[in-house]
Length: 350
Image (tube, rainbow, N blue to C red; front, top):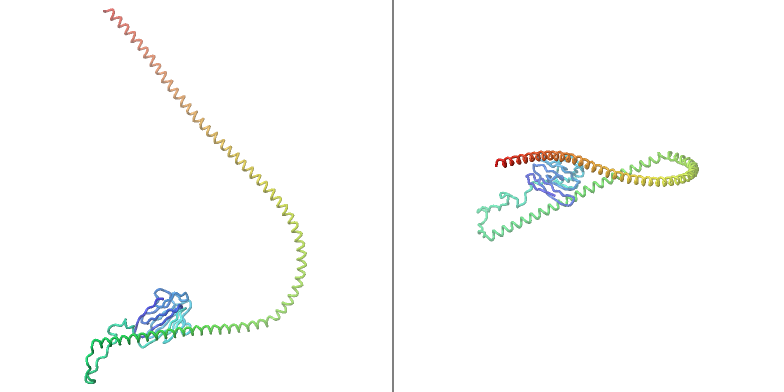
């Protein structure tokens, strides 16, 4: 639980306690104070009975009002559910599982550690010299003792204040428990009252239903006779049903036999399909081999055609070379003859 303390001159404060027994105190000022599960609520609880923004405490003029913010479980003030209520001293407020106590003082001072220097208690001025005899001057030790005494008194005051706040919290808890007990007692009394009315209503209904009950008894006797006749009819129907069941048993046996035959035929058909698929697979494989051989033959035919063309080209080249060779041989023979003629001419001239 998150608690905060704010101090103000009005001396109004809220002491609160949650379902786990944790307590807190918050001083009320001009700013509104929200109660709920939301993180920004000054009075906060994680219990699901408390809404996210359950209620709001706000100052209006010189008074404080608490207003319910459409919470699921409502806001109770002094055991009465309220929408908006002016708070008065010692008002007990219940918001789900949170219990609040509104308190008013003449003025609520902050703790001594938070006082401004101007607010700290001051030693009274020494009396005038004319009224009492002159006192000897105090030593530092006596001054220190006096300060220690003042500090001790201040601690005692703080302890007394804490004890008082604890007593107030305990009283708030007891008052809240009393309010809850009173609420439960009223609920139980209302339940008893409702139960009494229900019993009286049931008695009246029973009296009104007596003729109907008698009529129902007569109808029951008639229904018993009809039931006896119906039992005879049921027995006859059971005998017929037994015969039908025997015939159904025979039909079922025949059906089982036919089912078995169908199963065997189905198995044989499955085997036939399996063998047929295997044969088809073999045929497909043979077809694939034939296609491969045809492709190879085609490749060979194309190779032969190419080879024939190459042979034709080689024959043409060979014929060309033969002709060229013959021509060269003829030219060579002519040159030989010319050489012989020239040789003879040279011999004749020599």
